[in-house]
Amino acid sequence: MDFEALRRTMIDTQIRTWDVLDPRVLATVAQVKREFFVPTPYRHLAFADFTLPLGHSEIMWTPKMEARVLQELDLHEQDRVLEIGTGSGYLTALMAQLAGMVHSVEDRAELSRTAEGRLRVQGVHNAHLHVGDGSTGWADNAPYDAICITGSLPVLPEVFKEQLSVGGRLIAILGTGPAMRVRRIFHSQPGIFEYSELFETEVPPLRHKPLPARFVF
Image (tube, rainbow, N blue to C red; front, top):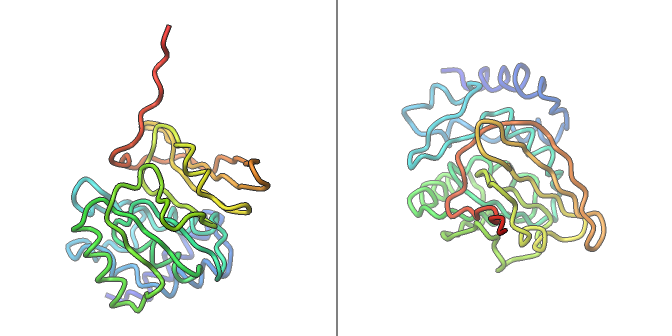
């Protein structure tokens, strides 16, 4: 298969049409080999416009969603990033191209080991993978300049905002199926956060997700 031709088509027909026009993001998507992070049985579908199974009820986002979220994170070379849910490692690799350091937390050791192997083979050395429960953040390396939570949450725990540095950006997928909202949170000033709703989607929930508080009468 001509992966380079398929990659160019993906960028032109899927990613650009989703208002992803940042040249740094487009160059990163063109450089990082998505097909290498896709499970072998689905490699021929690496550039298709739908999610792909990773096993363990996990999925790989669509290419346009990966690129759009990457653009919304607005990463820079000195940024320290937290990713909750390593998955295939592809989004980790994209973020590592633009940021200084990515800390990625995955609670399934098998997925983390596979992703780490792919990242090392691809020459990504500024991503540290951790095995553990990141549903309430990852305090060890906080604060972070950007946080990306790849599984959906019914509500966003406040601790994630507490671990976001001033000027930091956070992407979270909130709600329950079938319509979930992708929200961007910008920590504009100490204690002040700005919110914007980006688009709707549906992805599997984050394991160990916090539950909404029950009303007590």
